[in-house]
Image (cartoon, rainbow, N blue to C red; front, side, top):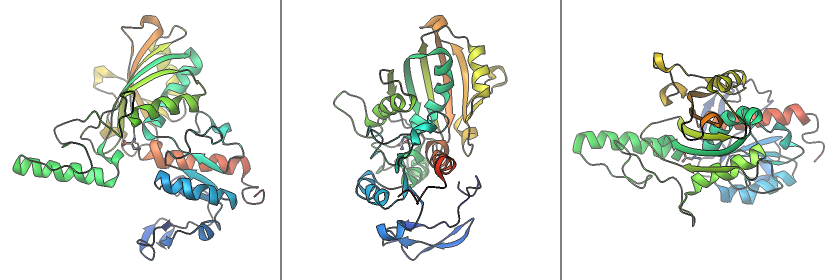
Length: 322
Ligand code: 2RA
């Protein structure tokens, strides 16, 4: 992603646990040897992109920040801290400010919010009801492998063992992503509510979500039913979204054109389609379907876009102000 976007780095260094240290990996910047993570070693860098557990981030991100490193963290460790920005550059780039720790949102939130934001600015979001259709790779490489292995095993033997997912995923869907909370929602579902409110700056936004794992490999899809404060039409929404950064309107149902995981995989833009006047909320309501690559806009792309904002806003002072 850094190379794809021609991020102006002088050196890329890769850090991991002692188990991986010493291994080499091919990158667009040449063969790299993975180094053992230590605060001292990473403190030599200007920007650290963390793809680690929340516990690891909580322990080490503040230590790196204290050493002058700008940390962009993909875990949920800091997303809900009032003093840490949670950023989608198309929505709230100014939130980056002088922060040394910047949180990257949950993939499901990022894909939805980038499509909701232009509509919110024009018509005012009032209520949003979301249902998700999330790819196996949202659970990591192990999730994707489990789907492939289970699918083969199921076709060969009629049975499939599950470890990563709570149930077999091939030829099934599982309305359970992350842990159940006291209110009956899962953590994944609550993340969409909490994070959308924070990123869009609408603390009282009424948003509820049902998150479902489906047997696709890559790219999450989401259906959203939206009530607005002001009247809205599908044509007006299409026109706005067509001009919005990070979004592509894919909406010609008569030609069987609508967002789908197979098409959205590998794309930077979140695809939006099936835009229609909602039957429940009438002229104040829309219904739409979004699909985005959760490994890109939902993770790596958004993280690198945050790094671009950091560089753009305070590149000169990255280390010197530490
Ligand atoms: C998932 N959203 O799809 C999660 C990954 N962060 O499981």
